[in-house]
Length: 302
Length: 302
Image 1: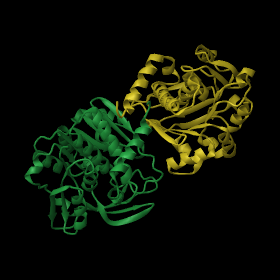
Image 2 (image 1 turned 180 degrees about the vertical axis):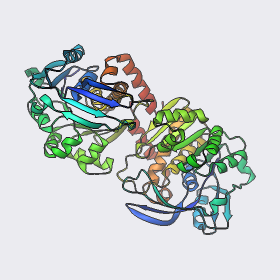
Image 3 (image 1 turned 45 degrees about the vertical axis):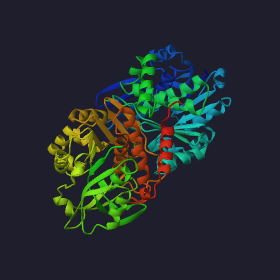
Image 4 (image 1 turned 135 degrees about the vertical axis):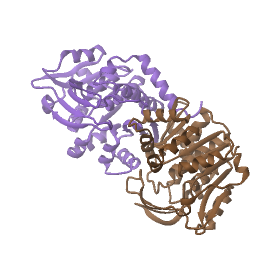
């Protein structure tokens, strides 16, 4: 089992879906990621919060064994995201973003974080991703997520992160936007030319596509009757994915495939309730049971 | 190996895609279906054409061993479809439909067609589907395709066909429209309540979902760099799917899964060129090679 470091956001979310709404709920890319990954490996968290961030949220992560040595407490309000979803739950509509303490975030972390074999750069400014990467001893695997905002606003910095990364996790619209290539297969091949040897495309209700070392692998989404709140699904996927790789301390073809399916398993639970509510009730037995269900849905022969 | 009967259309298509255009090209649901199925089993065709339908097209099907005993030659023009695709090749825009001899189509076929263990009711008026079904000895498996036009215009007749069918093949928009259910998983469960024990949902670039006897099975689409012309992909899928079932003369879980993947293999070839151009160049070795590629893309463990 190897250590897994994540840099990203801890946030307070206001979310509205056709099924309800929450106010100031625990959210943020690093939150979902760290919680999901904690089922598989030892996680180190680098992030910033304001004094308004409830201690109970930090206790929740600490209770999962997450090393909070890289969580800074800054003057000012915590990052807040307000969004809503219509009946087509595939895409969030962002209503408001309050950066708060995130506007002036410079990652600070204890010295032992520098030796983290697995690193995940969650969706933050690519300049911050680069800054962190420069201060880490060369890890075994660096993966990153990003979003349309950085693709259009900080394309050059993003390309520099990509040149140093081993894996990119994006959704299909982002893959097309990053490469300006309408064919997803061509977009993936183009991204592989930017540096990463692994590209994972998250396609919401259509599952996940991975291209790794010239091979494609596909996983369906779990056929849920209703998705309650998709917020954090991608970060939860990433937590499961990276958690499995760090646990195995290997990045071969078989482990990558298992990692994609475990990521999908974790994401399928996350969307069953608001915030981290379903994840905090989740058991290892439930994870293994759903992994078995995925295996069965994809099985071609005996 | 069991006999497979199909009723559907033989057509002349005018198709425009971003990559080119064809005029009066061989098309029609039964054409794609029969040609694809002919790689796997003995096919019997029930359809109607006008005197303008080139003999060479019928010779092409006869050359694949397709029994044309149910193809009527009628006075009037052959059914013609004119459509185009934009860069999003997932959906055709129908520009014109000339029913011609199809407007007054009453299936006529030789007596030996009545004992056909596998029957596919391709996308035609559900009244015609019902009429044909009434004149066939109870087959082992009846499957049907349909489209939005019949779902809105002949819902009651369609429900009567569904009550007698074992399998429905539709795309995801049609599944939602038929059930008025935005959740695809709920839509599929609702359709299972209408009669069929197997529902196959074709999702274009996202592959295929099958629900059979309470189990879900997923297959990705083949990751093509470019789709040339998607016309006939669904019918070609159906031909491969039903061809494999009829060849095995079994409808168990393992055979259904193989059938879905072979259907996807056949469809992935069909879209590589206009009309049946790619299918007419296709070899059995190419089919087996691509089946192996699908197996590899879906493989979770050894």
